[in-house]
Length: 208
Picture 1: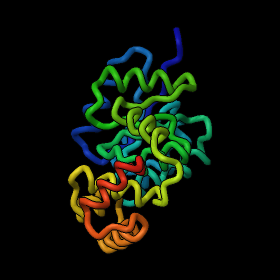
Picture 2: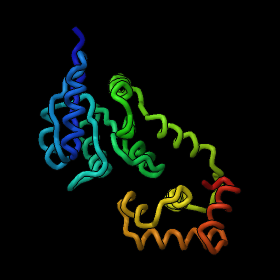
Picture 3: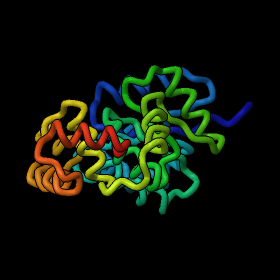
Picture 4: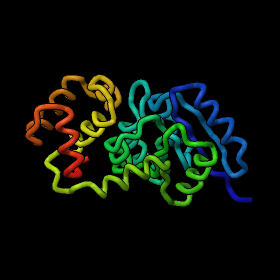
């Protein structure tokens, strides 16, 4: 018999975590060894649980998923981490992958996709949901000579998608005033005076 993949779920939404636990426990080659509602609660137990794969939420009370990533990788370098979140902004995707995440799935991914992703990273591969893969591919198609920073590009992309400054601030875990400061810098760099001009110019030059 093949040794089951040991899985730990770190997710603060009890309904979601229970759903994952129930569904994954029914898979023959999986063993859900523990479920935690935050990384702070999981931290002392993780080395004892010795998971092969961790499903990690980003937005949690206390230490969030992105902050937890390097801590987990340092303590458990052979454990594969899949970010499972509602957020799919390019900045968060690249930050997570840079910090050592083996996969990045959005919570609207179906069960088959999550099971496939766990098996994939369990054998050393990577896993992304379709929309996340599209974000990664799109980033390679952008104009590399853009004067905008990664954060400015991300914020302008969100503005172009119809999000408000308040929504962007909440999603990126930054202060609304910081968003306004970034927008001001975007206008200066693109030599424009309005949101519509900024979007039009950035799209024409393939900055977003």
